[in-house]
Structures are given as structure tokens and as C-alpha cells.
Image (tube, rainbow, N blue to C red; front, side, top):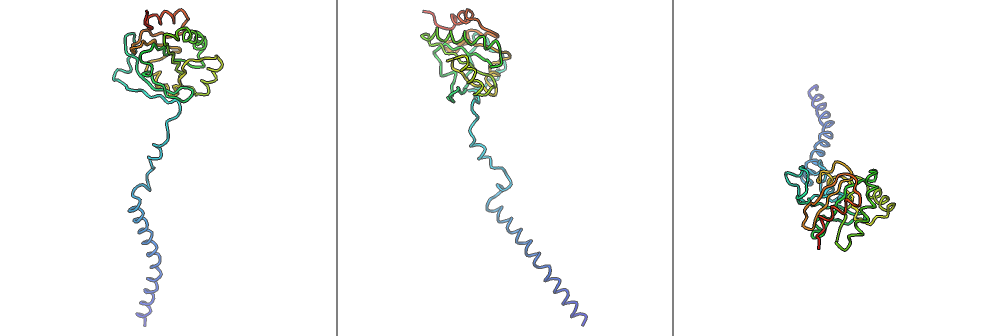
Length: 213
């Protein structure tokens, strides 16, 4: 009699545990199936989504960094190529102007000497239009809106580029503003000036940059 009661109790106990075991097994099977179908992607961030995000406006790109890119550029060196966006969002490269004399000016809106220098740069561009002179005014680490307000205030028509991360300033070893590089049609640096430029100085440097008839 006691044996029958014991067997009955064990049977009831076993039946009480069976739904829990069944549920646990179902969960494990579900996880296994999910891993088979989706792989490890369930537990990893989808990098492909991040890769589709376009680069932020004004981000600089350097064409090629040589091992000696940290060496100061000097007269006689070849100017280093770069890509930057202008205020209209167009990508501009230094190589676009090969064959033309180029003046590369590094500046910032908060720089008082830069503000004083801008009218002289504007005058130089207007005076040497027939010579094909291109002035690339590269703003360092400010937003396009800040730069656009400054350009409008001074009524400038220079090719104004935005270097929001300072990559090109670093490429050209710029450590103070303004800094200006003069580059001839062959891409060779003819002069480097650190600090405020006067109109007379600009003309002196351009005489060695623009081919003389």
C-alpha cells in the first residue's frame, strides 16, 4: 500500500516538473535556431550602416602622406596636394590649379592680422586675374556658417575653403595665423610667409611666382 502511494507521489512530482523542463528546452531550441539563421549578427553592431554615413561637410582629405610629412615645407619643395570643400560644398583640390600660380593662405576669423590682411589678398587677386592667379583662403577649424559670415562681411571673392579638422594646416606645418604659401604653375613653393602680409610683400613674392614675360 505504501509502495503504491510512493509511486503515485513520484509520478505526480515528475508530472509537476515536466512543463518547466519542456519550456526550458523550447527556449534553448529557439536560441539555437536563431543563431543558425542569423549567425553572430544578433550580438554585433552592423558596421555596414555606419559605413554608409557620408563624411561631414568640410572634411579634408590628403592625397598622399609621405614619411617626411612632418618636415617643414621650404622654398623649392613641391606643395602637398589636398582636397577641401568650398562654401558651396564643392570639392577643391590643389592639383586642379596645376599650371597656374597659387597663393595658399591659412587663416581664422578670430585672427586680427588675418582680418587686416584679407583686403590685400582680395586686391592681389583682382590685379592678377589675367595672370591666372588663384588664391585659396583655407580657414582652420571653424564651421562653414562662421566662415560664410566673415566672407560676406568683408565682401571677399577669394576661393574660400573650410578645413574643419585642421588636417591641411597640419600637412603644411602651420603653427601661426596667417601663414601663406606661394606656389608656381609647376607646383613648386616659391615663398613661405608667416604673419601679416602687406600689399608690397605680396607683389614681391608674386614676382617670383608668376612667369615674367
